[in-house]
Image (cartoon, rainbow, N blue to C red; front, top):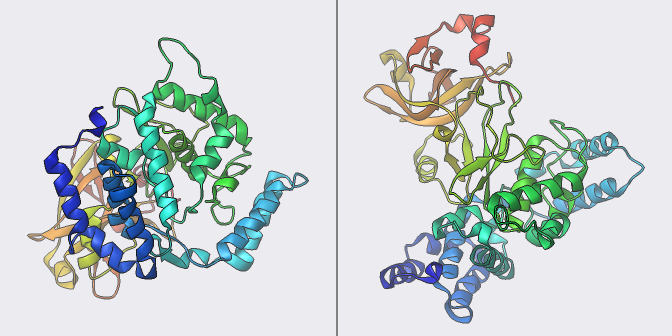
Length: 449
């Protein structure tokens, strides 16, 4: 019963925030245009029809963080998905032919589709949000394998109606559970595993892995298939495709799961994206890749990288402030949380910048780039920091990586530091830019994605 117990103070605060003219919720309602009535209907539903303070707070959480989330605009994506469904249903085509057919139609007709988007706040419907809240909430309250979550943890690990941007606003919980949740009807009943998070997650992982019959991994296969009925029958894809599907499958059965990723390619065989579940013991257990690997094994102990980010529904406040104030706008997504320190040894950096270079910089925001094995584009921006007292400052940077600091000169980003290696012992070694392509520096670089 503790999940239903909210103090009078907290309840008052929640209702006050929901009604404040200057609250984040009110700001989103103002930005929703003609769709405002749909969002207001959700709030009114949980104030009157289903008077549950926690569901009301869940609705407010979804609405106030909606500025971070967007979907395809227009009907072209449905044309593409209809074409994809026909291709995937054509058993006379091999997986390679299916992949190549979708790649061909993407290049021919739909290459620019991802650039045409609309904020979720302007299109999402009340019935969709209410069903999502009710289903996820009931799963949290009624399933033993989710009961370890606090309410705040529920908001991120189970509640969100999407796990990545441009994901279709469809009935993915019902669709994926129908395809890959059969094992839940006949669980293993013993004192050790019954109704545990890890056992339930592994059952779902096994059912999805066997049910998809995936064929290999490819780096590009047209637009990502972000519709649930296509994810349930996709025969090919890369690791991020299947890691995303794994998160959605887990959440469809109320297993708490999130998606973590790196902004650069791995050095060895590690994935650039993987999923994490929240165990019965409150531990975050990772997969190595997607659901083709066991959950909770050792996460590539030899791997190193500059950053790991978690896909979140909540807006990252630092990135929100950056978007409001930065003169140069790098396309950082708002729904990303820095979790690098969970995976690698990290250091905070304060890199001195030459006075002559400081004169060229036109913004307090600066950028840190990781070296990658790509001669045409040798640097990948992985985070931003700020200039303080003539130093470029950054937090939680992964060690054993080759970095460079860049700044905005009023026109574009330019290098404002020599390349440097952040060593395992926290020491910094500067190297000449002229030697960037030398073989001895290769070990400090990541692969390009």
